[in-house]
Image (cartoon, rainbow, N blue to C red; front, side, top):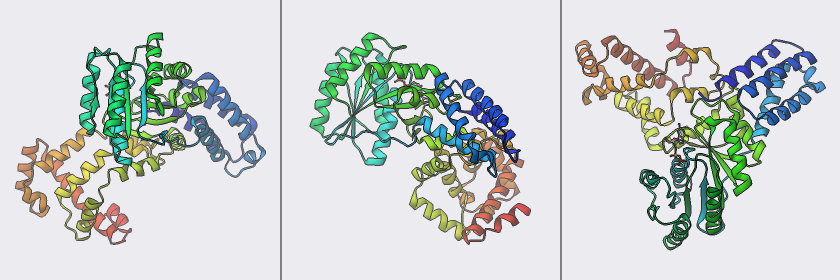
Amino acid sequence: MAFEGLTDRLQKAFKSLSRKGKVSESDVRDAMREIRLALLEADVNFDVVKDFVKSVREKALGAEVLDGINPGQQIVKIVNDELTKTMGEAAVPLNKSAKVPTVIMMAGLQGAGKTTTVGKLTKYLEETEKARPLLIAADVYRPAAIKQLQVVGEQVGAPVFEMGTDTNPREIVRQGMAQAAANHNDYVLIDTAGRLQIDEKLMQELSDIKDIAHPDEILLVVDAMTGQAAVDVAKGFNEQLGVTGIVLTKLDGDTRGGAALSIRAVTGKPIKFTGQGEKMDALDVFYPDRMANRILGMGDILTLVDKAQKNFDEKQAQELTEKIQANSFDFNDFLVQMDQMEKMGPLEDVMKMIPGMANNPALKNMNMDPKDLAHMRAVVYSMTPKERANPDLLNPSRRRRIAAGSGRPVQEVNRMIKQFDMSKKLMNQMSKGNMNGMDSMLGG
Ligand code: GDP
């Protein structure tokens, strides 16, 4: 889980402060030392850490904090604000061209996630702007690269312009641009070659493509898992090519936070998106304030709401609400709900976006194995359509049959049906505006 160590350590630093009614200078100094170590351990750039700690210390030692009612909380707020500032204050939107097409050129090392991000970004533009992008395959060095872009293009329903591996990338881009003009595509996304490290030849090629395509946006794709190395790569690309924005991929992995926290401060270029997985919908707009909240373990409820809205099918939701109100919610509806939940991403990640949950010990010990969802699904699929639509039919012999069919113990089937009944009652009561339903359900 991203930022886990950093979140834990920062919270430890705050805990010792929050126990105190009044904070002395030496308390602040101790906390700052903890914060400094936490950041360094998370692989944040040394200069960034130095500036960060200096700025927080100055603010924390301000008279109003020391005399404050809850100094610990105030310092958390200062750290939160400073984290936000370090990552760039506000979200920076994609540059758009006044006339079509808007050209987005991707750059980055091999394996950073360029091709995947082209697909994700296409999907994002299709969904948010009903865009019709053309994808240009300008990586002619890796034989599989063109094929990979074609697969991605197919997944998101966008055409790919390619000329095989024998034509040079400059010519491919030139002709691709002509094709986009002929087809009136509103966006062009250029997938370029990467290398294992920055080299002259690659930089020259990228500069040439830049001169040909006049991109409105040069998005540098960097792998967050590589920490400081990602920051060095970003610095190198920016100096030699001039990038306009950064996509930080693999934030779903076990990254410590160094890249997210350093890259803006070191390069001066904004992180515009983050990659949160391999699937085409695993791309999030980067909001520095939300990321700061996430790092501090205060949850990211806004991104959660965004995700819910994105995956929210209004008609389906209306039907579900009506069924809940009529108390006719059945196992078919349950499957629909499970699909919607899963679209939002791994359950643990979703839970951690809820304020206060990131460090909730209950969550830490909770075993939210995706297998559990698969088991639940297997149980529901082992019911006949009639049983799914009418859970009251589920007598013991039917339950035994379902257990055998799904390969799950009958106790588990019983437990699941019981939980289903309970949530059904609860949802029905809540839909009638009776929030006390919650108490009686929990009590009973
Ligand atoms: P490229 O060489 O820069 O084009 O990189 P690719 O797009 O081929 O990505 C390299 C690998 O990283 C692939 O296996 C992708 O599925 C994976 N990948 C890309 N973005 C993400 C991400 O945000 N999260 C995770 N977990 N994997 C990613």
